[in-house]
Length: 193
View 1 (cartoon, rainbow, N blue to C red):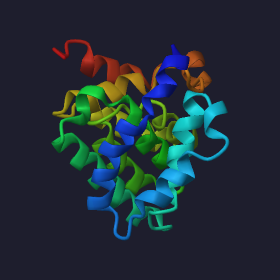
View 2 (spheres, rainbow, N blue to C red; view 1 turned 180 degrees about the horizontal axis):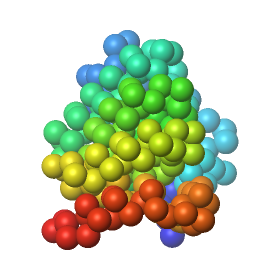
View 3 (cartoon, one colour; view 1 turned 180 degrees about the vertical axis):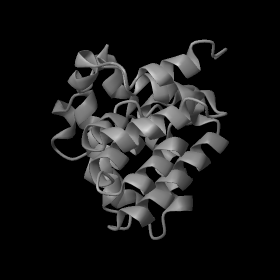
């Protein structure tokens, strides 16, 4: 399945994405972005490696200070949602990947960005690094999200703290003691979505 998924990063996808990046990133250079992604390594990259390649290319065009970059990431996500990209959102997984990779030292700004980005594409992979680094603060945030009005944010609250999640790092501390997850599950056990 991953073999087929890696082909989602195709010219049609980047045409749609670049239209949004041109609108949201000052001095975005579409040609340089595409050349940065489709370098000589691209054909041999697997799905997650391709996602990371897009993340790294995007980083070249965003402010180096994460709080400023997070605002643009949030704007990109909002613009994509306005264009009805939610229906085929998985290719945009590079947005939460960006937050995980560059925002780990900026907890508050990252939580705000994740809350918005997960409305487009699930941030269940990226939130795990924040849970590992800031377990108490992250689980407080996840508990708040479990009561969020948006079902995608509520879903992140439960999926993001699963002890085992395919394609992601295991949260072994919750296998040993799942009690921090229980308030989230209690909030969501009757969730209609």
